Length: 372
Image (cartoon, rainbow, N blue to C red; front, side, top):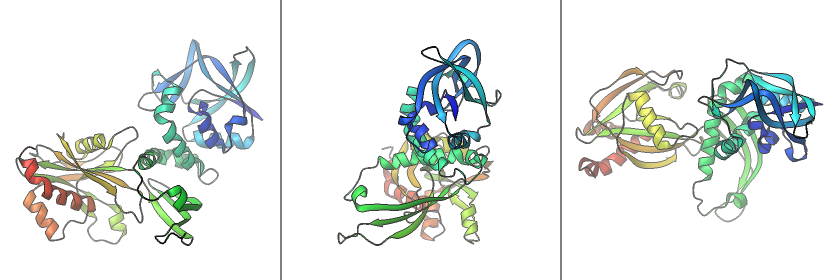
């Protein structure tokens, strides 16, 4: 049995329960502190770090009697972040001193920022972190923690997307009554997730249907924006290589599209649209016109796209740009509205969001050109 001292997000009992795979309420836990250390926010991140700080104390939670499997699960959850699990003397509120193991990061791994608050973190990130932890821990014993770390940014985006999906208004069906989840499996983890489920759902005659086995590509919500210049009556498109189109055997894997990208955690779809326009086309957009939101392929993918037309001054194009570290190689082109619609009419548009936005623009173009 081992005792551990937690100073960060694992002080949140619901998260500790998800990581350990059992209810934290029955564990031997007590508030404690570690002398000579301080907890700080990590610059550019939402989680904290601990560092040596003579004269200060790091508050946290001492958890006693953890099993070998508990430790293995904790190391898996934290292990991809290059932590060392070192023993330290910690003091409880009643003055008792115990030796407990603590996850210490590499001193050069992150830069400290201001103070970190568990209460603030729980309010802002607790719900999405629980969803992300479910996905991470489903791979315990199956893959190396480094693989989880590589995919963790995408896992967080998927978790935030799931929260956003749950907030959309319900219609006539009640999923708790009308859908039965018989078995849910996570099959693969990469930039996307791949999951499979056995389920039954209520049919239109009121009866429950047979057991179905269905799979889905799990991804995040995306922002898609078509830059439009009402004065010049022109749009800007970007072209990039799309591996899935190539994998399908299509001889045209370089695809002309609107500006697009996944919505980052803590970011609104509108903010994502503006960020992607700067990254992919070096454009600062003016007013954003919401053109709708929808699932891109309801039979195979969880991707939900937020569609926008962005008012812009289209006087230049760019080539060879993209987000750093994402392997993007993008060029842009400016087309007149008539040329865009000619491509639509001659079936040269093979990107569904572009087709949707072109048709939306055709309906609203006169209003936008009149400045309304």
